[in-house]
Length: 365
Image (cartoon, rainbow, N blue to C red; front, side, top):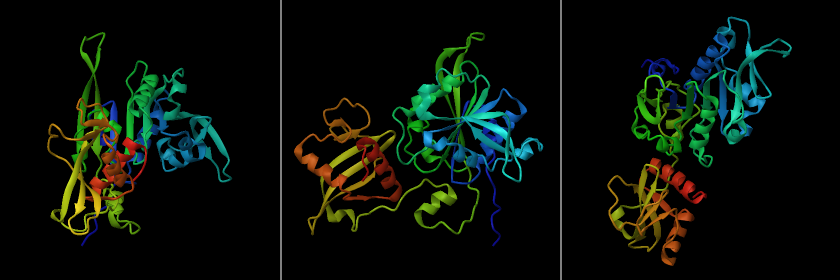
């Protein structure tokens, strides 16, 4: 059987949407970052007034050596027709540079800048009139996001784009469907997107064009990038599906050892986080008397009188923001969850529930 030809991602299709925000999601190492870097470096070289900003979440991620390594695969020599052969970083600036055989660096003109989102407040007084592109790398996390992260990014973008419209590229691996950007920007089709699919969303800014009087909207283009067909021999098991095919990442989870009818349902709670809902049932095994939580996705509407744990205010006496127990008995039941006595209907739901739990409680299970 002939092997599938290895292919890497290109920006051709998504740039045709003429959006302001471009969200690229997919497997690791399929060329998403390479394509964006190539586009932004090429744009910066052709026009000095179209520099880029590489944005990361944490300050530790933008140290000079890490940033230079990030740009090391960019075809600088081809882009600049031999004028430069690498990109180097010095005091927050990315330079077109030349490196000789003795590793001596000669810096040329500035290609872009490096910034970190936790320092967003420090950048408000800065002038970025020469910036046309922002690259926010690894915007999807399976760990923790910054408090009010989406607002921080929007504030940073508004600092850079005081008047002119710029392009913002958000690059993420398919590690978690639970992401504040998806919920805040109402990107509700993402969890069910197929590889190769592009969806475009438009949001009304509430402002009007001074010349035309028309409403000003922001366009967000989302692409679930196709697999590169990389046939690595180093990945196996559940994680390999995400690493080599782009499937949403899930870790192996505990499942019920027997059929559900061998358990009695003692208590039920619905956990709601962003657009995700989980039915959580506290079970007792009919023979052994062992207790545990069983968690599965909930697709039906939440009925009145249901006990709800949520990430938002719900005007219902049975709803709380977070795992705040309504009684001593419920507090004891929640302790079973905290100690990890949980079984899940499937691996993906388990991975997503654990992330939701971590965000609601600030602890892992």
